Image (cartoon, rainbow, N blue to C red; front, side):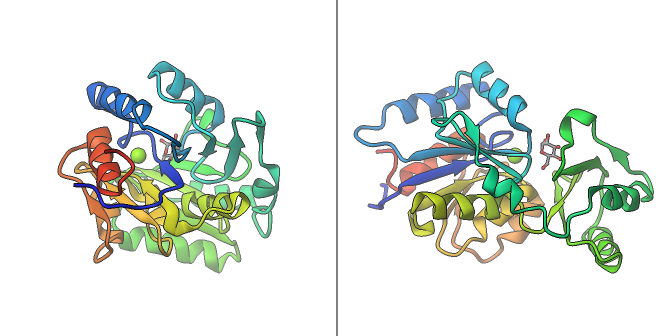
Length: 248
Ligand code: GLC
Ligand code: MG
């Protein structure tokens, strides 16, 4: 049985959350389209960049969202306006030095830069496989020592993103809810990996972690009142949205 809530905004990750198991994705689409009355504002929050995210949505026949936050919370796109909300990305510029970040990260052992289509002015992305928390922390310290205001995000024991401090999925959704006048208490977030943890950690937000959630996310959410679904990916999301009263 779902609980009565006033959910005004639903923000979900794509890969491993709404996407990954085509039949589960199809079930989500059906459930979303069957909502009676007003639907929550729909936001897709992904590590992919803008064009790539939109292609995925089309390819999988997903409902068109109201907003995308792309590049691990470095850009926000408004579908209705057909435009980026530039004030958000511009607010990231402070003390961000992409070239210096790249120089330092390139010196790490066994690191490989992700392809150019994954990079942009506020996102430096790499493959760095099987690293421990302490290795990730050392990198944080190294960037700090070099005077760089950068944050390090590690996902699926492989993907390393270095972003300006004011970016990440959580900060992007905070900015967007402020912009829209929506409270975090009226917001549901869903995600499966490290780059999603900043959304779950927002005060008052309601979280959904599907059964396939990565250890690094579960570790970050330890002790938090998150809905831990028994089913994987989009079916786990369906169960969570039922729990929070969005789906009947
Ligand atoms: C997506 C992006 C990649 C990023 C990863 C984790 O896969 O394409 O660049 O590293 O998400 O955030
Ligand atoms: Mg994911």
